[in-house]
Amino acid sequence: MTGIRAESILGNQAGASVPKRRMRRKLDEQRVNEGVVSAAMKGDRDALALLWDDSRRWIGAIILAHKSREADLEDLLQQVAMQLCRKISTLEDPKAFRGWIRMIAINIARAEGRKRTRRKRSMLRLVGLEPDRDHTRDMADELFVESEESRRVFHAARSLPAGYREPVLLRCLQSMSYEQIGDAMGLPVTTIETRIARGRRMLREILEQQQKQEATRRANMQGSAIGGAP
Amino acid sequence: MSAEHEHDNQIDEVLDEILPDHARDLLISRVIDGRASTTDWDRFRALAANEPEVWCELATTQQQHEMVRDELAGMVSVADRVELPGGIIDEEGTKRRMSMASKWGGWAIAAALLIAWSLGMPRANTIEQSPLIAGIPGIGLKDAEPEQAFEQYLESGQKSGKVIAEMPEQLVVETKPLPDGTIEVIYIRQIIERQVIDQAYRIMQDETGKAFPVPVRVERNGYSAF
Image (cartoon, rainbow over all chains, first blue to last red; front, side):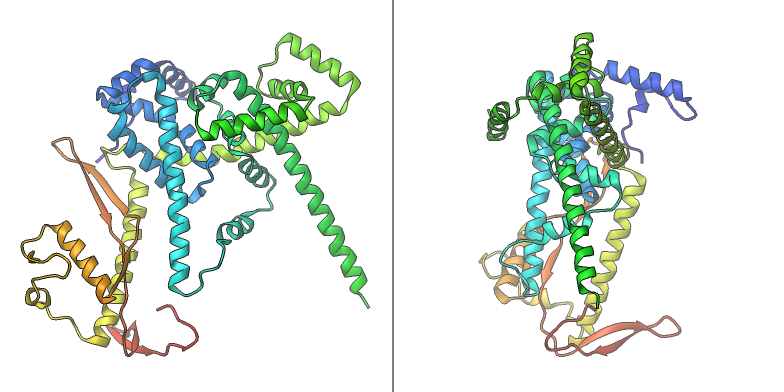
């Protein structure tokens, strides 16, 4: 059994050199246009495969932007792929594709978040440990903080307000232009530019604040260690 | 306009008022994204001549952008393994799911054995002896559709206290295309059941690999995983 792959209409890429792969990418970008979306809407499975091949990474970024756990990403993408196959024919305007698939991804990410909360509560209730408030997620997030700098920066980016987080992350995918991000989010390019600029500034400030807090914490620890010495 | 957009626009408006140096953020952002025009560069140089720390801000923002980019690229690379249903999703993913399913199955078999050892094996004709199920009078289990029968099981089980609930998510094990264009989905439905037993046992294996039960002492103020 094999999956539907874009290669099926672009030829076998095994052994393709890097420049050839780049050319293929360029070709894909040119081919993924409204015509491809229209063909996919009419049931052309190759067009649908090409569309998915082109979209899945940025859809993944959107799912992450809506605070899904990284461990769930593959499963959630499979749900998006399933919905894409089932519902592409209901899309009315090919121009609306990016916004449409973005909403599907967001709904799936949110539904998973709700399920996870329910699961935690019900499991805790089963063992008689249901807390008054659901602190589990916060605790898990705290435990997840890693010392590695880039990891810390990435988690800070995921803590930005939703309207800023999504364009900042999407811009980090090199294939996404401001125009494409605006298209997906249903916002003008000027707003996207503003959100990205402000989101980056917020990120800088969050990280500066974290560094200050860390420095204070260390200073306090040192102080108490010295004070506590006989 | 969605509530989400409206909320973000309100934040934008507030920020417009409290961030007079928005142009500075825009310039930094344009330089990072390679969108700065000649005029933007002239403005940036003029700004940096008066406030040299803007170079530092640029460097920090650029570095953070690259860190987020690299982390994100690593994370979303799993997307390359996700193919459209209509074929097998991907071999690795399916293998993992099958393994998960078999582990789950193994656990279920172990649990079933445990209960069987303590209560005795259920009689094969138990269902046959009670064809009418509470809640849906008149429909025998023999005549019911699978979904009806399942609903009856849940309803009856919840009434008797045996069934606690069905877990909301269903675990997809495999999808495959059928010749008629439809898709076959194999999945696991998870049901939480409750059983009161006199004695718990752990299933162990002897040196020949044969399973045998060992009584487990369960503390009154705690619980032990099997």
